[in-house]
Amino acid sequence: MVHIDKQGHIDLVHLEKLLQEHPGSFVSLMHANNETGTLTPIEKVGELCRKYNAVFHSDTVQTMAHMHYDLSTLPVDFITCAAHKFHGPKGVGFLYINKRIKIHPFITGGAQERNMRGGTENVYGIIGLAKALEIAYRDLDHDTAQITELKKYMATRLKEEIPGVEFNGDVSDGNLFTVLNVSLPPSDMAEMMLFNLDIAGIAASGGSACSSGSSVGSHVLSAMKTDPERPAVRFSFSRFNTKEEIDYCILKLKEFCLQKA
Image (cartoon, rainbow, N blue to C red; front, top):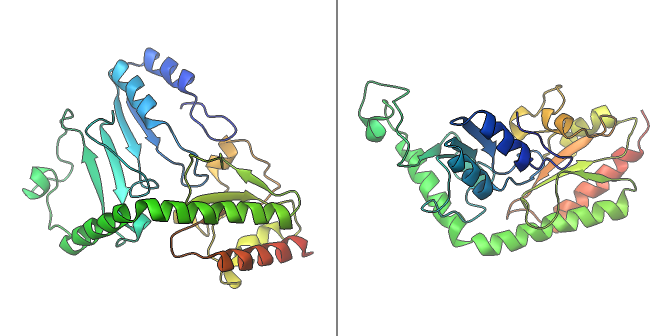
């Protein structure tokens, strides 16, 4: 497993060492971490993989339709996408396979999807994904500016209202603008934080959204060696959010941090 630093950045020197020791490997790295938003420089990773004849897959679920891609030049062999991350239908996504890669079907029995996956296609989902992707790229520059401003606004207001608040991952410009992972000060109510937020009508998670409700700690934050005594809450932003919602959220967070068990 490749090393990361305290902000979750991939150690490229260690990755190259691993590739030197194991040429022809399969490398799978997230473009943006779903809990912290820290980005992986997939162009540099891809170049290293090509140098050592490795196959490179990147999970771009968090970044597809939120960043520009040129797959004709990007040195990646596989990328994956999920439509619901850009307001498309749930349960549908796509896998991009570089034409230089030849794979065998995982599900046989039909000629669907160029003989790669037998079974009736989800036509409604495919159309919904395509339309959502079209809209997302049509409005990409506007939405990026709007959502980036919301994230910066929340980070600034949190620092003003909750002394001792910290952030997990790299929150500087250039990283994923749709996710903010907040490390709150130790509190008697830490274990009830997500429950109280839910009761207040605030959608948040302690780690990845797909594991909400799990009592298992975040393996991502554990690998980054964050303080386990500080409750970590993950907030996500979209073009449908407002500053008024953020103000309400911070008001409730401040109340919960001051509560006594």
